[in-house]
Length: 338
Image (tube, rainbow, N blue to C red; front, side):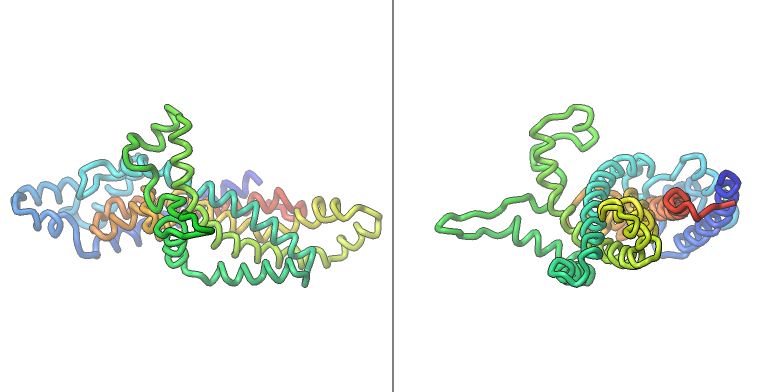
């Protein structure tokens, strides 16, 4: 296993270099940059724009500029934002905890609920529960995220309803991470926790988490059901039942372990989302995460921020695939990497 990991890590190096080359040349070829952005400012002089271009290495030949950018990136210098002037690393550090909170909560709930109902649906194939799960899965899988997000905001935030002569509504906040008047951020709340702060954060977390969960549960439950249906029909499962083992032991110890191997790929590929976030959901609910930062930076042609987010996301995708391979061997003793 150790030799396999070393070999995979060595193979990942040229792969990531190739990805960085593509990203860098695409960003250099895209319209925008300091000259286009700062040229709109009447207070910026031509020599100021040239100084910014020299600072960013844009006057160097493209191979030299790329080598400088990559060397600085490896050292942790992700560059500077063209609009705020802040370092990209500090901007990401402000947003990453918010995205990890949102994506971590939705991923954990989706994994528990989606895999659970998928396994139960496979065990109770063609039952009413199975048909209900299948219908829900098709509905959730085909539903646009932005449409469902707006729908949730209309029902739980924007409108009021009269039930039994009592007017109710505005149950949950529609956007943001904290209510108006709350000072600080999620990191500040971690250092100085308050019950009111966590309750307010939890209320803002409900709607975006629900939207992400619906889509993920629909997908993961289908994968879990299909994988479990294939496993429980195999000979070793029949043999386990013939030995007199209880159905709980047969499913939990023998079938579930092998049935989860295809699901690992889906879950592992979702792990980079803990950093990159859900761009559409964060934009709809004004959640101050990395996904929203990516959309805002892309719309402003703030390419240093865009390049940093995309390259870090690509790196996480490569290593999440490696993690999936390691988990394969941990779950299935028949899989060995030599």
